[in-house]
Image (cartoon, rainbow, N blue to C red; front, top):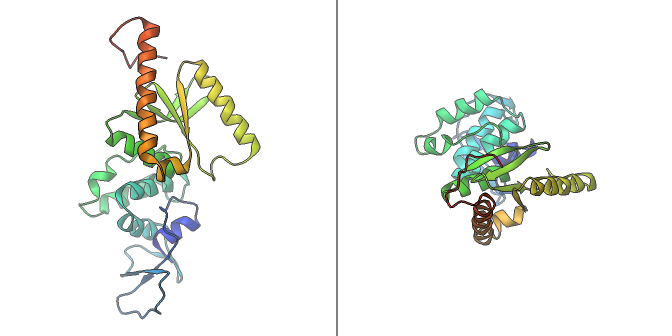
Amino acid sequence: MTCVSALAQAGVWAGHSRQLHIQLTPSARSAAASDLVRHWEHPRFEMETPWRAGRSQALWRAIHCLDEENALAAMESAIHERYLPAAEVLRIGRLASRRLRPAFRGLIMNSGSGNETIVRLRLQRAGYRVEAQAHVPGMGRQDLLVDECLGLDVDGRKWHEGQDRFANDRDRDIHVEGLGRHVLRLRTSHIFETWPHTLAVIERAVRDAQRERMRRRGRVVIAFDDPL
């Protein structure tokens, strides 16, 4: 087992494929099965067991199998989940094909989940400045801060389960709104099923937050680097 299957089993972001990815040497024979994805290659890194690729090998194969945004999400998730040390993830990125290297220049060390990474990348491509794990005075950190005026909390089943977490999240929302920073909370479906609508909502929320800043400060020029 290798690639995204090995990552998913370890709790690392692995995209949305549910097929089993296996590694075979070029001379191997494989039974015909439609639910298998075969990677015909000699491993670049050590195997963990005769039946499972090592962690470096699994991530190496995955970043070549996934699209760019999911590949970067897998690398950041591998760091967050302590699947591999950050130095090893960076080494794997430097060894990647030339086609993939530009995407990996945006790698950060503090993304909280694959969903957060993908939202950040999409908003950056849309022209927004996005800070991951932004500081909230008196409340810790917020998943993403867009143009220093809109907070995003990116939910996922793994990260936000249970009644206690639900209550804590709502307490955070009230606290952040009280500081003058608007908040949106995104579910997985908002990212992967209705993203165009989600982006339009974010764009509207950013415009509204900027206008509100102008109104409160009583001036036309917005100094985005001023504290909230």
